[in-house]
Figure 1 (cartoon, one colour):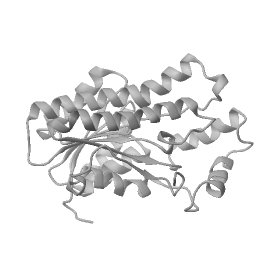
Figure 2 (cartoon, helix red, strand yellow):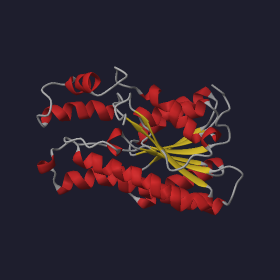
Figure 3 (spheres, helix red, strand yellow):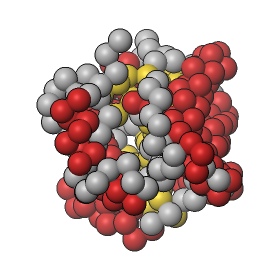
Length: 268
């Protein structure tokens, strides 16, 4: 790994207190990036920032960020600029899931998932792009990176609203790429499958609670047995290389793409 692959990149990451967000932040910093870590869990992002700053490659700051609020997204972008001088990359990783069967979905479930997974991504993209445009042109593209899911392309009966929200992430990636190309801003994303994170650990419990699975761990086993071509679940370490590629100069000629990192689940 090039220890300076991301040197000079100032990157805002949402949902950075744990899981893929934290793993990406530490991986990016190892390659020289400066990171603004945003999350509603301020203590969590402070811990990640402390680990990064102790290692001494890239620098990190932590901000409290409710991704569903425009003013919080704008403040996180400004904090990145105040700390590091400008912003080069936005990685919109925050997300959640709460499974329901189609006829059990209510407004509370719909609004919760759509607000965090889709509305928040739009707000983050818009506020970050606004700052990038204000900074003016540079020799290389600014980058927005959206975290999708296998549910961006594959309907799943137990998580209808989550699928809807992640189809929305795919649409934001496509539409954002078209809208922002004139400003030298690329928009890409990556779509994980089953990643062992706190989100999936909670989902595993919730699938038992709604009666879709009989016991905890069964969802993992069934997906590995019936869906994945690579016969194991993934971990944040399996994802961070693709995220770093999308943040790096190696992806400068890409835009409007959603890369699947799903063990072959969505082969078509």
